[in-house]
Length: 185
Image 1 (cartoon, rainbow, N blue to C red):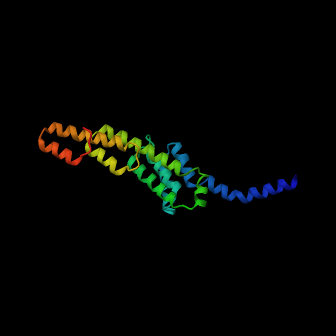
Image 2 (cartoon, rainbow, N blue to C red):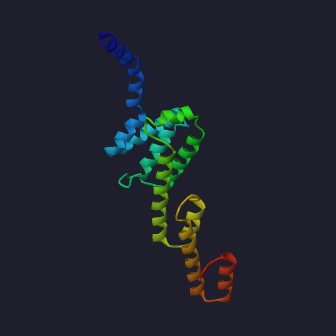
Image 3 (spheres, one colour):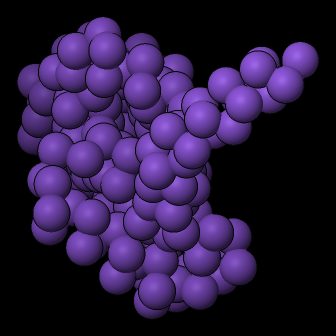
């Protein structure tokens, strides 16, 4: 009994430095600061972590979360999308051992993809409020994995058709048909 207690004490002290590093990592501190809405401090920690290691998947993901928080004064969906895309790319380049380490944070490809889908949905909602052909074209170009692509294409075609209808010239209709020959309008 005493022997097993002594072994567990030794193992605790051997593991403690690694555990302390996990608990005080800049990414964990940044997550806490995001939760407490300390935006400048969270961003500073994440930028510093990325400066030390530009391939830091956790820092990249957390920076995406940072930009995607609506109550953050620096809320910016384009930046959030850029960082989540880089995080997913960098995650795909990791070894199996490194991916297993990230699960302690916890972070895996599913979480990164889920965040990307949330960002896609938020951007699509913004695009629908703008409701212009250019906005839909930009969404389709910049969000190739969005689930809303079919709806965005239909809305783009609808807006383009309405523009042609408002112009009411044969040239406008010809341009519409040349641009979107598969449109259902």
